[in-house]
Amino acid sequence: MTSTYISIELQQQVRADAERQCGYCRHPESLLGMPLEFEHLIPLSGGGQTARSNLWLACRRCNQFKGGRFEAIDPQTNQLVPLFNPRAQRWTDHFVWSSDGTQIFGLTPIGRATVQAVHLNNDYAVETRCFWVEAGWWPPND
Ligand SMILES: [Zn+2]
Image 1 (spheres, rainbow, N blue to C red):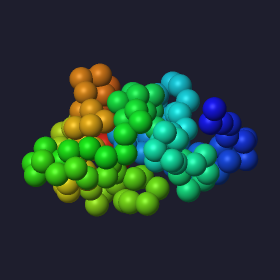
Image 2 (image 1 turned 180 degrees about the vertical axis):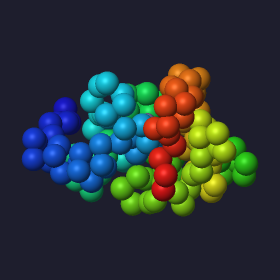
Image 3 (image 1 turned 60 degrees about the horizontal axis):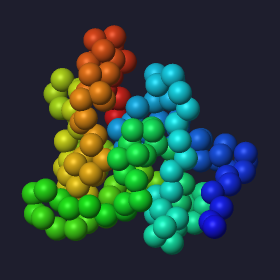
């Protein structure tokens, strides 16, 4: 059986690396009311390690939709591409917010595949973002 134990020290490093926000939908821990989860960028089932280089934070929703995947189909080109890697890639290179700040659009094959595979615009996430926009907390300004 593969161990998923993550030491407190490693947890602190990854939380700092990820700046306490989901690597995919960017929802911050401070607004979620629950801790973000540690996720394996390359899943253990795909040979990924429980190491700083392979760990990031994700919200429960994104983590569950991502599941054991690390690749998905880009809906525009039908090519199998890697999912976005929040540790190795910059979010703004692959995604952009809709003008009202509630939807995420993929800019690249990786971005488009990730939006679809991880359901970044699922109804619950969009509904929450509507309130955050109304409150002036959203979208992130980078
Ligand atoms: Zn998320």
